[in-house]
Image (cartoon, rainbow, N blue to C red):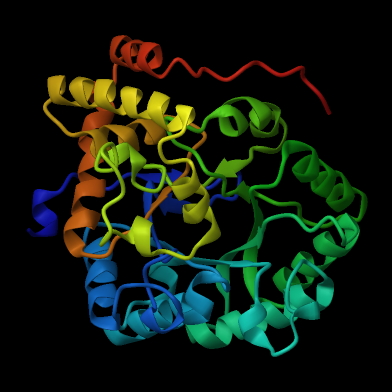
Length: 349
């Protein structure tokens, strides 16, 4: 398949930054860097990234904790291999779990100023880049005062190591507190959040963060739009022994595995079957429908997808064609199947 056969990529503003990112981005979680726990070799990783680039994807995401740092190395090698111009792509990484940066884990995790700055330098070295465009706090650190976290990320912005900073899976109160401290200190607050968001996981994005969009223009770059593959429908009858799901040691995926055959899993499986029928009525499949459903949320700047082969990249991009077909009527039909509309929260701040 060539990029000419794919729909035209859409680009969206990342919050109030003025930065435009492809509405679909490619991440290295659980995939790139076989030496550190991923399951895709360098050649396949390069093919996936090139397929994404050719399809118009300009946003690539990784983290210091992905595959023991190998995800960053592979992405950096790919950028260099293809000679992509730095100003043509947007690269992000995330800081929190950086045990790979040293032998003693004591200060190689968390969001202390020491760890944020030292780990960012290590990440940039692995990437072979002078800076990343977006740097995330990869989960909150409740042992470190918020003012220290805000100051550390602003230090990196001031020294040209990143342009923007954001959060991943922070709650609304933590994001708001970071903004209040940043305003008090005349510094920059977090501009983007990277939460899990999909048809089966909605509360935080659609309810908890609602005021943050209005007050701070918070942008979203959600991960797991297919909920670790559940919304492909391939796990309804069990987890194949040779699947990434079965072989992964990642704590997120292990948590998913523990839910297999629980009442919650059974409810979700019934929803997946019903959603697959809706997808069929639209002339598509469930993965594309699930991705398009995420993209229909106006607060989503870019949905992060993974891929172990180019075909998976192309399938994700094809979901863009569905956006105009997700009418209010279709969305209501999906809503009735999901039966998980988030509860409205009392407005705060």
